[in-house]
Amino acid sequence: MRVLVVGAGAIGGYFGGRLLQAGRDVTFLVRPGRAEQIRKNGFAVRALDQRPDELAVRAIVSEQIEAPYDLVLVTCKAYDLESAMDGFAPAVGPETAILPFLNGLRHLDILSERFGASRLLGGQCVISARLDERGHAVLLGPMQVLTFGELNGTPSKRTDAIAAAMQDASFTVQVSNMILLEMWEKWVLLATFAGMTCLMRGAVGDIVAAGATGLTEALLDECRRIAASQSQTIRPDTLQRIRGILTQANSTAAASMLRDIERGARTEADHVFGDLLQRESGLDITSPSLLRIAYLHLKTYEARRAREGTPSTDAP
Image (cartoon, rainbow, N blue to C red; front, side, top):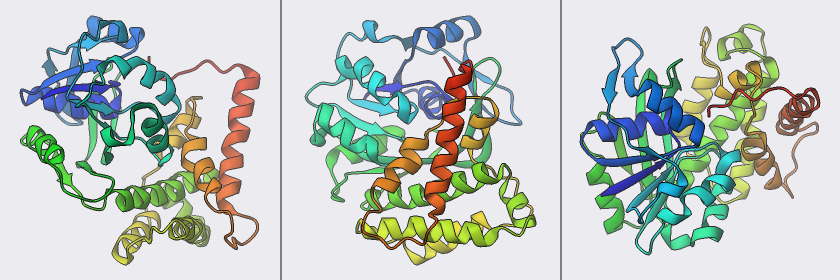
């Protein structure tokens, strides 16, 4: 199976690197600046306490795509999706499967409109990773899970083939028959997690120490109700797990979106919060909506960033 990984950031770099390490046929589609960085510094994947494992990486730009791929893994930031689609379009053939790992759900409609719903799978990942100063992918925690499936919930030969290609690649692979619900559950977690840590400018434990867990609970309930209005009822055990994560005393966990703000980078505010707000119409959300406050807080940051001409620190 020929695999094209769109983006070689923390997520694409790590999972694509592990697949390459396991002997799979993997190519990275990157922007020219990232291609040059890889040429100069090489590429590696590693856990935080391990030495890097240098890999012979094939990193190309769009103009170098010569034929369709069997699987396209889309791992770019949500705000880069439009340009990414233009870039990987030559890699999409009649039998190509497209598997995105982006936040929120807006990307499903965008990808379906461009390439057709039949090519699209649903997917999500659980991982904490970053790029180091050389542009190598570093795993920061123990979780490294890819979950995917057909959006209609039915088993298929292509999901079986993809799962087989990803076996024994040093991360957990799960094929789901309810991937859309699982994507919603992750969205509810992320919107609450990012919303609170960005609003409060602190980690989960800091928010607990400040006595603000009531706000966390309120935001979680707001996001849960929006999901339910879309016929996606968060499972009780999942809701309990999310609540536990977001109210854990002494937790140092903070959303990557907070790190984006702290380094003056772009955020996925529209994709994580804005799109969720678009789906709340008709709900009796207590005013003021915490989700709306979190969204407007980030849009204010972005307006100031644009006005001041903040140099982008996004990965090349």
